[in-house]
Length: 306
Image (cartoon, rainbow, N blue to C red; front, top):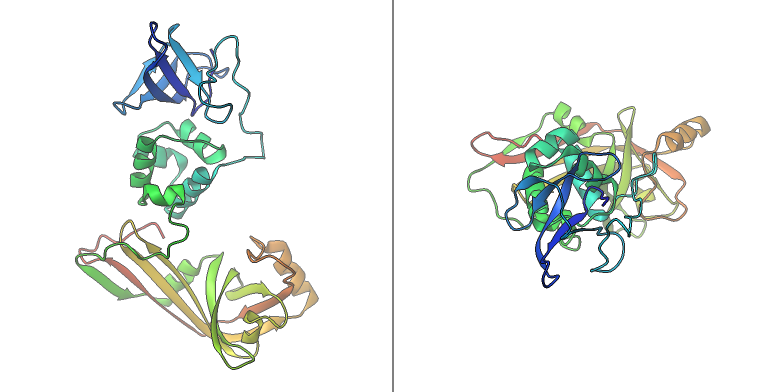
C-alpha cells in the first residue's frame, strides 16, 4: 500500500465491503508512501497513527471515480509536485494568499490549524479536496471563512458581514498608508472621461520609487487620468472579523514615455493587467496627499494581518 498526503484511508467491513470509517492522511512516515500513516478521522477529527490492515484501502481524490481505491496491486499514481512547477488547486491558492496576508509561515499556520506542515504544503501546492473539518480549522487559523476559502462568495461584494459591536475608526498616518499600499495589487482610480462623465476603474498597480504606476491602453478611461490630479484608492475588508482599512492617494498623473523607464517597469512588473489585451501605456501617479482610515475593535485588539 502506498499513499500521498491528502489521500483518504477507508476502512471497510470484511462482511459487506461497506465503508465503516474513513479519514484524511495528514502525515507520512516513509518517503515512498508506505505505512504507517497519521490519519485524521472524519467522525472524531482526531489524528492517530495507523498501521492499515487488510480491510483498509487508500483512495486518492485526484484520480479515478469514487470506488477506485488503490492497494498493493493498483499503485497510486505519482502526483508529487514537480520541482519549480507547483500546480495548486483553487482552495490551495486561497489558503496560501490568506496565510501570506497574515504574515504566517507554513509551520505557524499549520500549528494554528492543528495539522502537519507537510499536509499544509500539499494543500497549497497540489489540487486537493480537504474535508469540511480541515477547512474549518484553516479558516479559523487564517481569520477567514470556509465560504471564502472555497470561493463561493466570489460574486458577492465584500463588507456583508455584521458590524462590530464596538467599532473604532481611526485615521492612518502617511507612513501607515505607504505600508498598506505595499508593492502591488488592485486599486481604483477616479477619473473624468473625455465625454465629461466621472468613472472609477479598477487597475493592477505597482509601487515604483514611491509612484503608483499602472498599465492601460491609449484612449481608455484610465488613460484620461494623464495630465490631471488623480485620486487612487486601495482598501481591504475582512468579513470574518468585521474589520478593514482604506487608503486614498491624490496627486498628478503623467504618462511614462522614457524608454529606459518603461523597460524597467516592464521588467519589474509583478503581474500582467487582469483585463488582458494590449495595454502598453504606463501611467504614474505621484502622491502629494496620503490619507486613510482603519476600523478595529474598540478594545484595541487590532488586526495584524494587513
